[in-house]
Length: 331
Image (tube, rainbow, N blue to C red; front, side, top):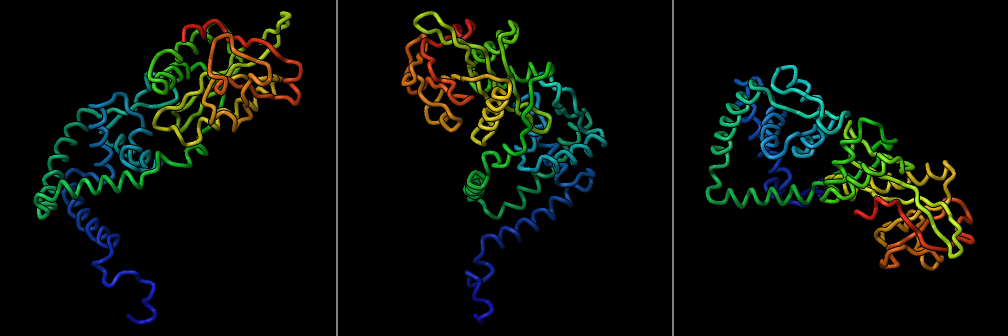
């Protein structure tokens, strides 16, 4: 090698997996594009149409965000391609049955027919293209899946930045219920929120919204701390905090919690209590309540029952038994 080639780590182009993948991708896409030409579909259009057809069989309804995540496409790029498919009469966007701010996707009769024809043609091309791998094709596919899993963010780290935090609106109620059901794998917390809302016991309800879809929710309700002499101190209970499973561990829950606590502070509230993970909530200013002289009316691991001051000195002179709203007894 000459000196001006020292930055190459490989001895030959064939030793570079990235360059080999590039070459294979170009050759494969060239055949795919030719195969899709009779159907008047681009490759991205085919991927979204075929994937939507597949997903609807597994989960219905399917949102734009879910389809983009399944295909590894950027949401905005997917939206532009879906708009073209809609103009072609291959898909339609209906009002989401649980979230009035989101759209569910459906394939038209014409779209289903075209998808079936195109899938058969593309699968034939794939069989011919990868035929030279013989019995190794399954192992090859497993290696591709390993690369996808290793390099796919879970989902994307910037999602918390993209999420809009706002107050609950009437059109969000069904979506909020579904977020809590999926996050907690049951109806308990979802029904709790519905019951508190119906009775007007809630103080603040915020949602996290992304691309027109509610993906997270936090709820605050009134509670009291009763001293030994019967003196009552007003407090706020944080529960529940829920994020759709596909969007968890990306900072959306933290963004909801911080926004909620900031708004409560502006509303003049002084103390917030939470029963939750001892390693999660301290980042928001929570600390075990028992050393402060505050306990729950039920037996619980003291490390998980916490309190946070929204105003300096709010805990001064406050001791007693903390009580949630009666609806919490059913959870």
